[in-house]
Length: 215
Image 1 (cartoon, rainbow, N blue to C red):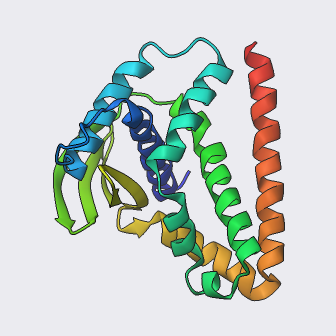
Image 2: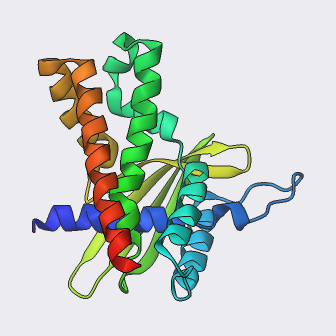
């Protein structure tokens, strides 16, 4: 498999790992929010601990992941950034459908890979903040390589939410923007939505088969 594809899979998997326990990090209403790096560090460390003693069934694991991922990522910002100029020309109904499908596809694509976590190590290289925007630079260290990962976050009340991830200088949002933009240009927005719905059905069917095999 192409090295870049492996890197994207690894980083995306760890992104969702980091999402898992954010709701359990309590911040007093009057306290200043911690910086984005500290939030990422806390959640990654707690999630890696959790993975050593996971819930007993695939359904329980997926329920725990899904219920928390939605509150960790700003899928609306991700969806709008992915469509770029096509967001302006889409109808309200198309925007809503795209945002929902985009979030569902990201979850369905990467939830299974979370459980395949091996022993990658996360090193934290630093953070930058400007107003409500933040960047956290990390390095994923594997047995054979070091993969630079940059998380882009936006502050929402007391929590930093991921809206993009840059892996070896390749933006996840820009990758989707290029792929989806070409489909919209050649086939139209409705065809993109239809393709996304078909892809989601395929992923859900594969997941159901996998769950049945594990019972």
